Image (cartoon, rainbow, N blue to C red):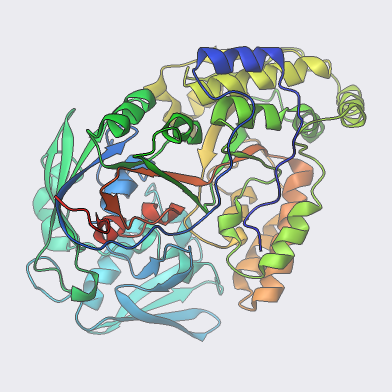
Length: 544
């Protein structure tokens, strides 16, 4: 079974987009295609150290404050969760040996007896309750995972009972994400305001411990030889994280200055494919680049959003911005999120006709008719950009698509370090009608994404409100039968596609590059939550 539908060939790339591809030093229009795999060859031996590149310096190592890619890549090896994502994106036991629904509103987590913090202190139910309540606090990154939770209590030394307002089938898998991290309360409280900063500790348990964060320079993890789970003992003694812009990351891999990286943009892999000493892999993910509409109002009418989706040249964007290593995509969730009833989700995805890879004239005529029906906005539609190559190409392709159907659009450029604030700053969002971003979820369940369309969802900025959609979210969360939940998820997808609060652009598989002497890392998006560095080691007949 394919992990994604076949690529469409022969698309024409708009001249403006192609020119930007050359300026940004991306790949030529025809790009390679890598077979998706969740894993790489297992390690054959130990290594003293590896150097791993990040796309940027972590902004915080407190994942309740900021759960971005850089910090997740580091802390996936340091902080363990109640449940555990595997390289194939399935979910199994973690610090909890099992989770069981006692009735429609009560789920019980039973802790693994051997689980302990760094100093050997056993992890107790009280530690879990305190950690879950921290995740659920207003303003915390993972608080939306606790929407249906009414009360959390320790019902034994190693037993935690969560009382829900309604059954939530997505809640247990969500505990494999950042909302399931169990903290050492003593260490975190001792850190105080220093927790999550270069002066703080990691306050967790995991195969690696945080030993250094030199701001502006590096983050260092060292193997925790006292780690309680000997079955997951790490093969690499020391992992040093450094960060750089994308071209510099590629250079470090070419020259052997670094041993690996999960590439921020798939197009960075194209020059690496020409280097026989570098291994390049792509694996399943939930990641999709989308155009996220705001409350500013220029795209308040869903007919305009659908029209722009119909006119957007996704195939050109894939080739120009991602070197052909991303997939033109019609939904806001990648196939790594289809964790059950996969054939049903593939069928439903194939039926989406509102987001073509290469718009033809009938699709453009339909888009123009929608614009005429809705009316042209009084002001130009404004799309945000931070000058990053992929965003620049997407923004220009959007402006081109608007012009093709009788709309005027312009680009507003903001500093790169400010771009992430669109998620949290209403004043910043009020200056643009949409911004592009690569969005991912930790659950391999479409319901875990489509709840973002509920009227009270934190990232539903466009004002999309549908009582039936809200009811479907609750019904889908309560459905523990996979087939039933899949049908509800498909209906949510259909309603989302009709309203188009976000315009999907391309699906991006995880892209992993490693040097000649290293292997073992998963190639899927599990690296954001799974202790991937513990699987690293020397390749066959290699070692240092």
